[in-house]
Image 1 (cartoon, rainbow over the protein chains, first blue to last red):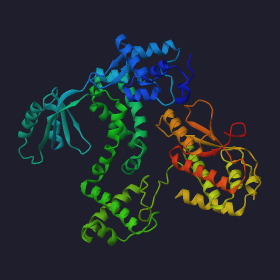
Image 2: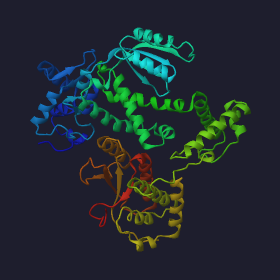
Image 3: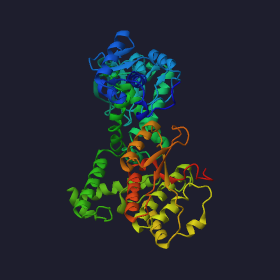
Image 4: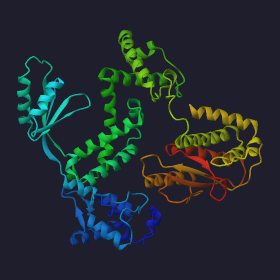
Length: 425
Length: 101
């Protein structure tokens, strides 16, 4: 029976063969170099295992010609059975356990639902005309409304779909807004191409995983989607879109593809919610403020700048600036009605919804973290290190010993208060 | 100035961020702690590593000199900054915690 979790160092005590197999047995694609690095083996050791396993049929090499390898679900089952380990067990503390959904590895699921050539026709029209288009395209294409309110018809042949849409538009010659603005051939899969068990599991897994991938973009997402449920719904949409577009033939992990798109897609939100003019204005305005702070040596962002200074820095006339600034302020007001925090100190102050629950386990953790950081700050500020140890000894205790805290020096307590204020900003 | 108990270690607990892999967090914390404290820290087993809480204990300076103390707190400061997403906070080692929740 295997121990529950191997660290990198404890794995190194095992045989090279075990190390090689423990990595590849998660069912994902591995390049030679990544596999070798994680298994901590030599080129020769890995190459020998690969040669033998390719010959026995246990190992699968990418058909693209890349030196990427994986194993199938049957191998994973057998390998875990041989070592008396449950299949979903977290064997290595630096890799996810095998992702087996609907009886398939993640890769097998994608390979069974490959991308297909489809035609996409984008159009805009009144909603009652769109209803007619949807009816006319029944059995030919599926019509969806995108986030901008435009329609997209997905089917096999873009040319054929376009002809049908034009036929419907021709019945409404007075509707000047009716317009087909693009058609193209692309590659897609549908979620219905997967088994239900696989589809539910992959979406659930990657929605959670996606949150950690989009950490740097979290601030942008929160500005435009302050509500947690809205953020989660958006992540579900991004994950599904990524699954529909992911090219399984590239022999790379889906997580890598998702990581790359989640670095870009959140930045479409400003355009989507604000329109081009205002989103560009906000971006340029933020850059102008950064430049002004740099020029004035304001590292902490304590200075505030006049509208004139900002507009000059942006190269806008005062009329243009005032017009867009009004829209910007109106947008800020609408956002601060909810849970938004807009992090531009000096000018826009943070606000939180007064209806938010006051005490949660999460906020307790945040508070404990702030106090701890403040204790360290106060210790460095005053040099009263023993007082810091005493204060730290009372964190996370059920019953705080107030006598110990009463003995703290005044200088340390004052510094701690100052630090707490600083860390709460 | 308060008289502190001369306990030789101080403990910090980290929390795996929502949606993050406990394994990835453990790896990140291991690397960060080792880089800053260079062997003067230990991972404290407090149950299942997948529970979302990861604890380390840190050896306090054995000699109470201002220079060593400052160096130690500078390291803690750096640790708190680098691991902010894991909401680090002081805690008590299991055998010293008494009424810990």
